[in-house]
Image 1 (cartoon, rainbow, N blue to C red):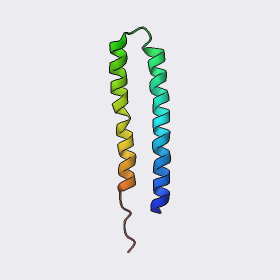
Image 2 (cartoon, one colour; image 1 turned 90 degrees about the vertical axis):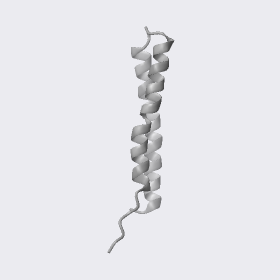
Image 3 (cartoon, rainbow, N blue to C red; image 1 turned 135 degrees about the vertical axis):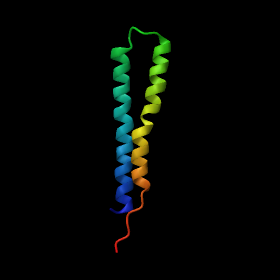
Image 4 (tube, rainbow, N blue to C red; image 1 turned 180 degrees about the horizontal axis):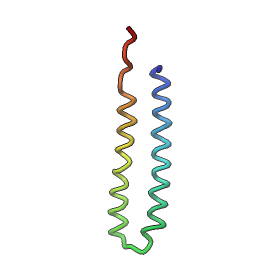
Length: 71
C-alpha cells in the first residue's frame, strides 16, 4: 500500500475514533451518571479520557510499520 494512502486512511480512522469515542463517552455520562456527584464524573472522564489512547496507539503503530520490500 502506498505510504500516502496509508497515512490518509490512518488520519481518517483517528479522526473518526476521536469523534465516535467522544460521542459515546458523553452519552454514557449523560445517561448513567446523572444521579452521581462531581467526583464520579471526574473519575469517569479521567478514565474515559485515557482509554481512547489504546485504539489510537494501535492505529499509529499500523501507520509507522514499514512495508515489506518486494523481492
